[in-house]
Length: 136
Image (cartoon, rainbow, N blue to C red; front, side):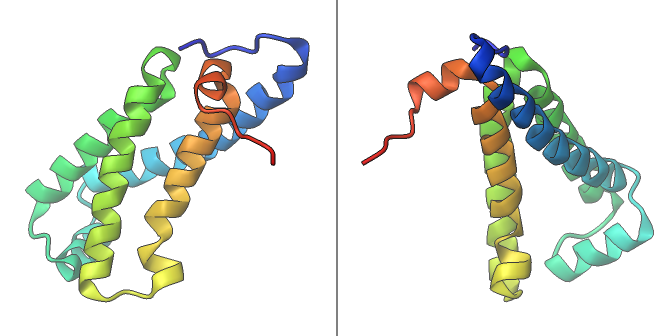
């Protein structure tokens, strides 16, 4: 997929997409790094979710960082977005399983996923061609 504006009019989409993607990338890099470092508050939060030990935190952090780096690179952004969708879907399922509040906790992964896909959609003209938004 091409990750550059095709026309002058699409430059706004392109830059808005990178800003949106940049916010998602920054958050995911921070989250993945905190897990990789197995910080004490991360380990405590993971215990409450049913995940035990530093090894689990580090593995989740490595997976998240790998997916995020794939997403950040224009040539592999779609693959990264697909992989992040799976990762975030797992986060939604875990939060649902423990009975967290819907809009603030359970759907947080959906919100991040919307930034991931929304940013990619705006910055990638080829993706907009493949998945056009239709007006009625």
